[in-house]
Image (cartoon, rainbow, N blue to C red):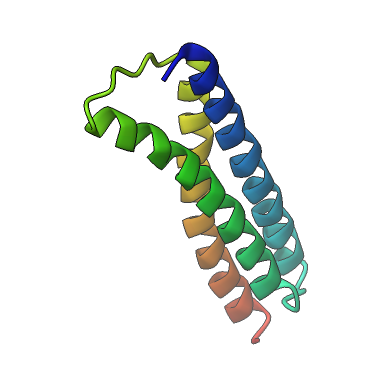
Length: 106
């Protein structure tokens, strides 16, 4: 896998993780104000985007595990950072939903 291919995968990861992050932040804003009707939709959107980001990441992992030399660049590492922080945000978003449901007795 050449550097250009790695950069493209890095950009894909950033884009998909960014889409997931946007859905999750919208979800948190909504539940903070007591709106719960979009919870499942926004979580599903975030999960779909995270799956796409994870698939791009897995492509690199599989190549390296198969013995291919993989030249990591900053763009791919940046994508990894976005993916991991968004996965954490996804986990926290569920906790926020539960906390705000308790607050609003939903």
